[in-house]
Length: 439
Image (cartoon, rainbow, N blue to C red; front, side, top):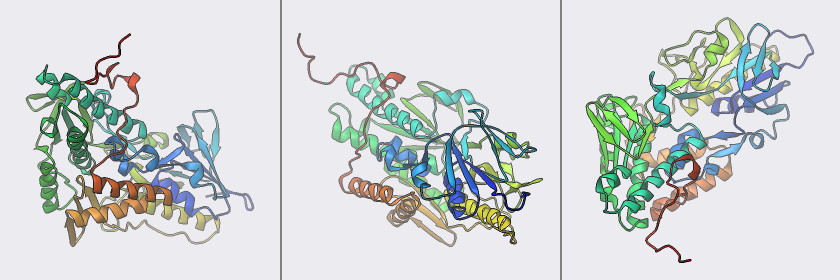
């Protein structure tokens, strides 16, 4: 970081996810101008997005305005804008608004998006869940399908069955969590809220191309992850390769299966940071960084979180999870702060693995802590506690914790709202059993 003596350095952080906010927080007392850029005005707790999509939580429960989070960081400003490129020679970040941001140190924490493995045309008909808008659209699709099934009643059983079939593609933590949550939502909603459909009409299918679920977990936990969704009525199809997806059907092997909602949870790819930097990337598009998280040849640029490819001290890839992103954000902040203070910066990044967690519906989860492995209710308690801890503020923790307790006791989900009626997720009118008003 070369700068004239006495000049306040400029630090730019792109992305207000876990890593970006961790870096901003660690730099809040450093004598520097910190600019935090994001294309959304809110920080989102992505691990719980599937609960918004399945009506367990409302969007505001897992999101908070970025400005509110950093309001007490006196050296930090927030810009709502899109990054279009990075001028590494001129040390400038280029924004869509036409503004350019000079930097002495740059932290890129832009996360990841869905990967359809070369079939990007599937994105329109098999959405993934990365944003609040994604979750709301999926929620409207699921609830709207149940409304249409109620309307069909017994007049057209084949069409009704399609409205009550939901397919989740991908057997990692996101897919397993999503399938379990859909099964719980649809089964209990069918029993409690509808007159002409029941849980026996609903079919949730989880498709995984590999030989088992949760491939990153030990095999015994993967087997538990297969059994637990089945107890919720989820049909698990292993070795199921998806060949085609349309608006109302998915082809698995040679079988074409009609479905009301098809949800993608099979893969991710990094943001275009590697292209911005002209840097080497791995197969998922992640920037291959040095052990201290800097870009080779550019010691003033750091890439963290899902955008970075780095190995831990044991030579294992650091996973793209929230704890890793936060640790990386804090690490690069220490390097930047030490450089500004003309002290010796820390060396390589060392990842502290606190374990892997995945939930499988109400009061079921799996937890891998190396030598210690948990499943069932005990793992669910650990999962719930960990996720509450990583929420950004006390209000969110209180609301989400209370909502989970209420759902656990009553089986009720409070956010069963259908919005976006103009986007094709619902028919123009939905009829009830009551006759139309006269006149």
